[in-house]
Length: 427
Image (tube, helix red, strand yellow):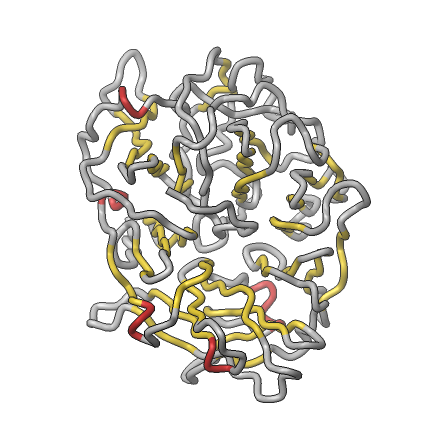
């Protein structure tokens, strides 16, 4: 399904190559890290505070600790691991059965244009071989009752030195706690020959313009806007109210650059919570004091991290070996244990909201749903959706809106809604 592994976080999305196998053993824990969890009053970025298993109990994987205060706990249950050949047909429909919905064709902009990356509800469109501002467009899916399902913006940088490249785009809900940065709903990272800067949309105006005070090092590759506004490459820089200051650099022996970064600020007595991953597979978590510590070393037995998901209080990390670590931001920096739950290269997991969506190598969908009538007690299981298969994808992302987890994907030529048009149902 995926033609390559990207060094990008599909902002709130689980995109991994997993195998289908059963986890052995089952130990109950009191808190469900995949559920609505978290008692600090915070919600996920994009309004996803109600995502997960609806507050149901979860089980730890084989050998997993039942102590929910342990960062080393792997919150795996038997119903997370499944065999696609044995999955029964889904009995109830969900928005995960919708789509694929075509938002935009690359050739609509230019015959040689192609999509290259995706973040939130925005896709980056590039025209190869051009070096001026016409080489990029930011295509954003939007909720609408009209025929126009997207907006198309240009990054406007008239004083760029030697031309510029757009490296990353992202759209979604931006925390009001950092309104002083001046971000809009659609944002981009662009770099010229001397610096990188953040560009954003302004109400009532077309195009993305530079954000004052957003100058960043030339090696910056990505943005993380679902906690503290941060940007990262060889180091991570976060907004401090006046500018971007370095909060973490890649230590010697742990890799060359960060591929994932997330930092939630201190909140009503809770220390800041963060996650970082390097290109060599090192994983960092914040400890009880809010300082980053190496939890998984580079070049570990589990291999590289192919994807990481996170909310304000929990995280999910998938390694190329198929090891899957579900944990909580509780201040512990114990390494994960007993997380070898899957074989690689069989499945892609495309969503981690109220339900999970998995797609196999043929594009068939599997949805993790709550089975109300299951005995001896109700629990989640993956079922096989009868919806149209998902095409081979370059990148995927998600956007939580209301009660829906909207999933998006791109091929080189198409920007797709994997769950149909943008949906924001209210319960």
